[in-house]
Amino acid sequence: MKSLTLAAVAAAITFTAGAASAQDANWYVQGNAGASFESKLDGAPDRKGDTGWAVSAATGREFSNNLRAEAEIAYLSADNKGATPGKTSALGGFVNGYYDFNRGGQFQPFVGAGVGLAQVKSRGNDDTGFAYQFKAGVAHPFNDRLTGEVAYRYLAVTDVKAGAGVSRFDGDYRSNTVTVGLRYKLGL
Image (cartoon, rainbow, N blue to C red; front, side):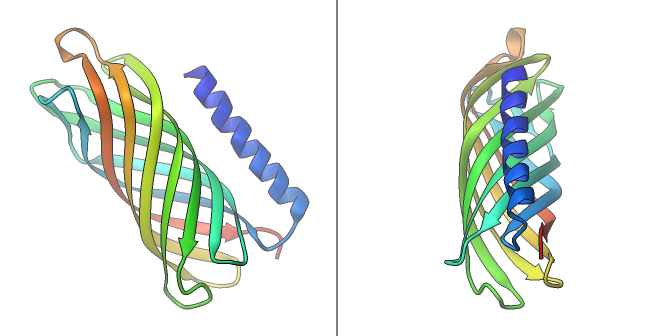
């Protein structure tokens, strides 16, 4: 957990420092919040996540060819449904890439993908695994600096072992989230 947190903080500081020194309009910070649906633990069929919540923060850069890259920290949490009570959560650090369609328009669809590491915690035990995610959504610029977005995210953490006793699982963690967010451009 400590190494994952330190790596995520180091990545965020690195990107933020670069953004601050560049002072150009291409760097941004972003925050998202929303709902996590049907979180699932493969290898634990009796444990399925109830609707929960998700938050994330990112620092990134836009490029002139409709591409964006960012470092992101994401946290998801949901209560378990089924025979095993409790809560399951995931904390991850990602490097994401995006393609923005219709940049400059009022509505800007986008698609993205990311890879990283995430820690899955359930019933007091945790494990860290390789994580990947896919995103799609629509952004709307409010002005030159501030853009809002609605997005869907599919997130998976592979081969994690967590939980205790009969509620222990060994498999993949998967989640679907819908979020709203704000992206703020730095240095205009």
